[in-house]
Amino acid sequence: MVSGSSPIEPGPPMLLSGQKGLRIPFFILLLRKSIRLFLTMLLIPTVVFFVLRIIPGDPALVVAGFDAPPEVVENLRVKLGTNRPPLVQYEEWILSVAQLEFGTSLISNEPVLKLILERFPLTLSLAVTGMLCALLIAIPLGVMSAVRRWTLWDYWGMVFSQIGISLPSFWLGIILLLLFAVKYPLFPLFGGDSLWHLVLPSVALGINRGAVLLRLVRTAMIEELGKEYIITARSKGLPELVVRYRHALRNALLPVLTIAGIQFGYLLGGAIILEQVFSLPGLGRLILSAVFQRDFPVIQGGTLFIAAVFSLVNFLVDLLYSLVNPRIRVS
Image 1: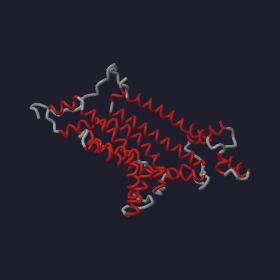
Image 2: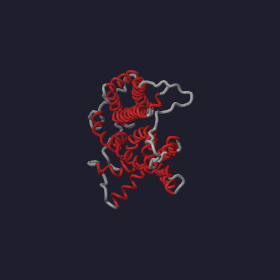
Image 3: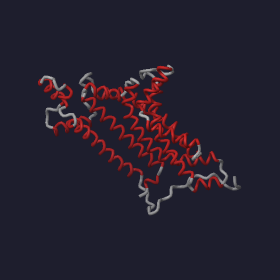
Image 4: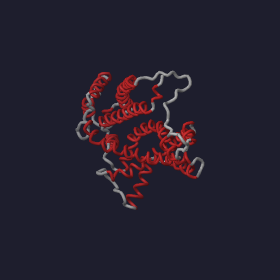
């Protein structure tokens, strides 16, 4: 290290050309995003309400079957509330959603919200473990590809990324089941009683999402390694590991944070098919079973719940990103 030098820490964020030095207070940003979240939460039940009534036609006829007696269909219309004018139905639906009342299942006669809350923890656990698996894949391989650019490591990482993006998670889950639960019984075949049951579905989810994040980590890391503060740090004699992982990687992970939050929302939706493949009693399997059984209230409530959770996750990621990267609050 050069005599008298000190470790280089990234300085305060620089303003882009043409930007003014006025930074939006965080509470104003919070207020703006909260208003947007409120409007989104109002729009979601509206979309769910009209789409599920326009696409299938008469919900009561779809649920009861097209060969059902007219009196059965009419009784079902009364139970679902579709015998009233659409605007009245919509008003009742919005009020019930505001009170967290999603109706009663036509199959089990249990409250829909109760069924959702019983199944959601397993789906959330699967999404969290899948995201952890994706990050464990993306960050090391992405950094290695960026540091050893245009070498065998880089080419291998890009090939893995391309293959991971191309393979559907449910197909990969079936292959993992056949290999590590049937041919080599290292993991349980079905069920969701312990974290051990989540290993194979988490890997199936993580490989696909990790392949997407790997490219982002590589690109962000290459961009950071070419910046002036990295060149200055190297000229002052800082160890290469410190330059790469303490300075470059820390800043490169900022855009990864936003994309990872969005990917986490997709993991909640992607778990629907995988829960069926691995027979996991989660929210996704509940919704899929409701589709097969024509349980209209469960379909409606489950779809609304997943969409609301996805929007809430994006809201929290936006807030977190504005805290760790104050440059986006410069007006």
